[in-house]
Length: 407
Image (tube, rainbow, N blue to C red; front, side, top):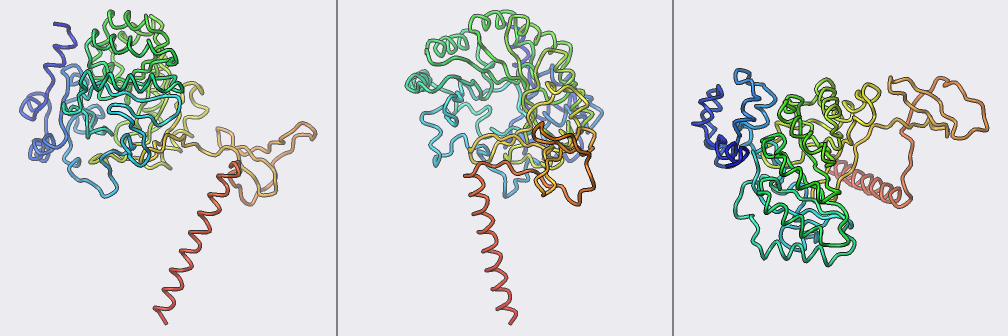
């Protein structure tokens, strides 16, 4: 049996096996079975070895060991936080396909994972065998892709596509590759993190035949990039497989400049491009991992100018409900309100910028107030004006009611 399969079969899935390796608090011991009953646990022995078992605040531990706080479901948390199956958007034309953007689709070949992230946004399906595809369902998914000439990329996600054996995985990729209008294949996988033994030389060699293929990994903390993980990433990259990384901003794990700097440099040293840093989705039971957007934007601002630009990922919000991803960015381009452009340098200094070459550069004089410069397309500006007018109307109505009540 292959090493990765042995590793997977020896994963810890219950409290009794976990207590032999990790010192649990009394609160964790009381609630572990209840938490696991609602949100499964699975920790491969390899990943367990990365944890400092005596540190209750160990960041690796936080990402894989169930926490009683997962049972506190908040009102704003959602079963399907990014709207994979939002019927009002009609973005799931057939089972196992999400078609949100015109030129690419998500395909879910398996709900199985190498481990269960405590912050997972697809807790509703991860590890649930009832979401496994039949051959007929997979054929219908491929038929749908064939019927849509605008689709140029298929993104295999899940679950984790690399939980499929090589034969099934290559058979699926072969089916996708036979569709002429599909130009690229992307595989999103946390197996290089949970179980790097899955990245065998045979897998890497097999993927080489289907260029261009992109692997998107999911390293959240620099300690997850162990020597074994680095070695297995090299097996892919040395064969021309493009590797990107998407992380999630997590409280108590990586929500500071120092940890993210170390993570992004370590990825770059291993020839992996930091691609996305996700704002945590509003999935059920994960609010204790939440970092506010304002803090996230400022952490990215702190990184600017301290590490190379190619090492800084896009900070991304997946709009709840299935409305797509948008970058969350700090405003470096500002105005003094008089039509002059003011730019904030990475060190925080404000500099006047003349948008042309007809005038001599000007020194920045005292400015009472700096405003983010407006660059909205006209249709967006109209929506913003309408929204503001609506809010002002509602506020006026509430004030009027309050006055009448007081009178």
